[in-house]
Length: 449
Figure 1 (cartoon, helix red, strand yellow):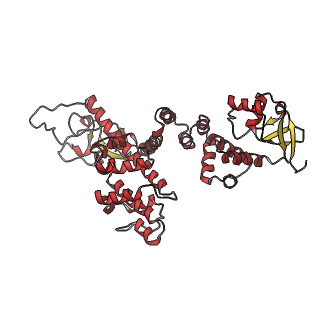
Figure 2 (spheres, rainbow, N blue to C red):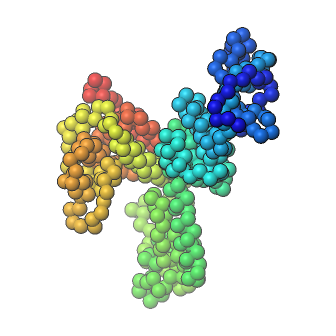
């Protein structure tokens, strides 16, 4: 075969359209009608194999439309047969330049290239995409759940999250539900699921360790005579002396709002062991209700715990957003007013910022060990005069972050509203619990201006 391209007029029905990176040929009625009336104006690029068959390299959509329009012949530029990898790369680059590839198409193309031995770095170089983008696409395609998500038209980010939780039926169902009803909350829900998974794994490991030590784990314990199991700190021996940890015959595991677990020594079935409660319940001279919490009280406590957990998860997503924002070439629009407003209206944000958080947000390397008054942002600023505005934004954001607590939703402040509103202006999606803060109060004059 000659390396010189040759233009031929061929029947489109005789052409072979190989697996193409652009799966959706988008054959609209208008496009087919145009081809039927005017024909194919731009030649299709193809190559002829040894068996004589002509395979389309570029122009899949035009070829299929010509078949639908029953055009007898179309112009086809016959070129030398490229290697399979080069064929796919050529298609990917062409369609990327035309902005015609979906993320699913791109991921499928990179996957095809990887199957024929092209590395992620080589794919990135040939297509002009970042290596991170290519590697993320390959990671999503390597998972059945991720590939399925891409097939549904989900974003690469959503597909990666589905791949991350593949095999976790409950988490996958929750992600599916979020994508159907509140896709803008995906990152927050995913972080909550990560936190929950991490906490559950730590709990399982702790339980396994305790069982291996021969310890009995109980579900509850109390401080008074109405409890079946007593905390050691609330028990006394028959001789009246306080019980110690050596007297414990069981442990109770509690979990705080951060998902961290603690063990407490307990005397299980204390009435059968000769121990007694140290204290009598004092009712203040009035009859005090005993027994389990009411359903209303349980619901209130559950809501409180869930929202506290949600605030901690939102913190991770929020700080990641700021880090991504400050990784861009240009500082976000309006950063000057944001920083001066913070310093003048909320001076604690500038004076009390966390240097480690700020350094992380601006992408500063932290090499030295932690010491008294340790401040890696100060070290970063001392070493570099580049992009000082980014360090200033990080400083202010880290200051705001230091003032936001797990239960800030219970008493929303203007300080937090100002910060969250600015992040939302810059493209951040607030979580449901953060919206409680944003929706509280009325806008200030500064916000309305």
